[in-house]
Image 1 (cartoon, rainbow, N blue to C red):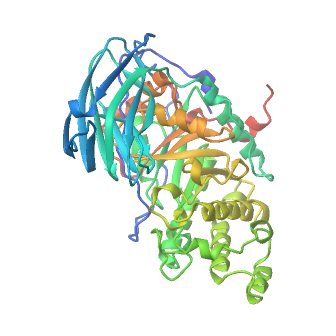
Image 2 (image 1 turned 120 degrees about the vertical axis):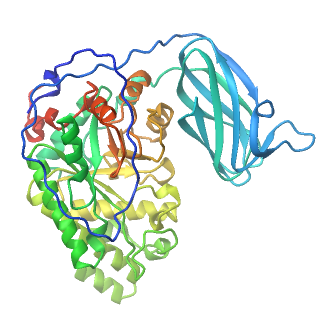
Image 3 (image 1 turned 90 degrees about the horizontal axis):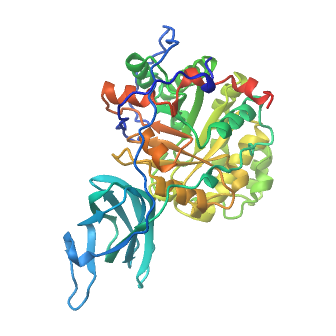
Length: 507
């Protein structure tokens, strides 16, 4: 296969547009299987260098009082200078920018309940302010926001909670620092296969320079990636899918997942990278992902995770009979063992698999996020059970969430994020914040997004997510898709090395 160092690049003047999509867990309806097209991939491409942006360096600071802007679903309390916003409240104002460069946008804000406030620049979402509950005004910032010269529209929207906003401060900043890319790259799986070692080495080598294309598919099909190929003549580097049906108890759904596993094996054989999420239907009669539908805290309250993770099912049953573990904990481990059987099918075919279990615990949507400390124990149990008991040497673990739920550097290889925004921003402020948030730096990836971050913006803001995975069912134009897949920054399947060979390469 072609190597990234042998790419043919011709400079063309086009822009690269983001792609739209939706973030979903598999529905109960079944979809016909499809397979990869057999036609060979073209061996020559016209590729596009990223757009060059004018980026200056100058001192700048300005303050905009919230009360001077236009606002809705909000009011100024009598005798006060701040604006009190209800959920859904909006604020709009303008800033005159002399120098095109990166800036830090700072809010003076407080919230009695806690709030999430969206930042838009010229109608494009660029970040989110997360405000902790409290009675005093404090400062929250979104960094690395590029503002072109001239008049810029600054808009805020209170997406959840309520907030009192005093002012907006805009000051000069810089793009993300290259120290973000000095990360830990060794697999945390002590039984890591040659392919896992090679993949992690390859990821490390491209991190900070390139981003891998990725697409999440409709379960049991290659519909999305076949469509991408039919338009561009290229496949994404990563095929992403979902393991939720592993515990459905429905023979048809489980067969659909087996069909998907077969497609993943074929994808790997043809040189692509395989990725699976696991939204865990709860191990009780509800079989639900919703918050509150499983009492995780009670299930593992007495659990010695290190001890239990490598016990046989018979040994765990004996502990239950003695009253030392709960029935819910036994059900948790049983579910992990069932999922392991699907992942073992991939191991036996030597398929390196990026594995993202119980994602978005911090979102408030899922039962596995109802208690932070219990989540950490659950994730540790998952990791140890799969790696040390089932010896799943083919897994690369992705933790998707914030620092408050982080189980620890020893339990993940990559940190993922989900973007549910119709914006092609690189979200450089979020990239930089994540790079600083964890004690041990890990590579950062976008594992699900409604619109792919634009390659030009990743280059401009020095925010190179390791990969950006577009959700299944995303609408896009042919022009947008070709522009994304022919960027010199974005790597496609034909440009991946043999990862087993990569592990053994000479430096």
